Length: 71
Image 1 (cartoon, rainbow, N blue to C red):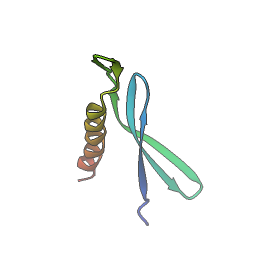
Image 2: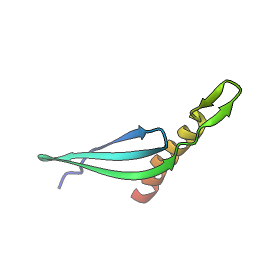
Image 3: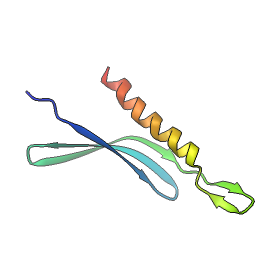
Image 4: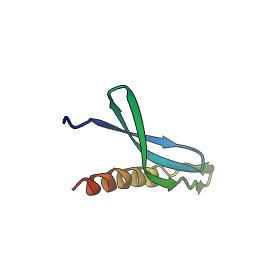
């Protein structure tokens, strides 16, 4: 049996984000949401902005959680 290869993608929306793991095996594509997180805006003097550092940290947490489950 050959191990399948997987790719991760990050989907960022206005209110939330998620890390998704995708696999292609034979003639099928499977997607697994491995981490969901809130996308909370930060208020700065010139208005609301995405919290880039928070989104990056949540993305890394999702990838790390998947790696921990594989061990």
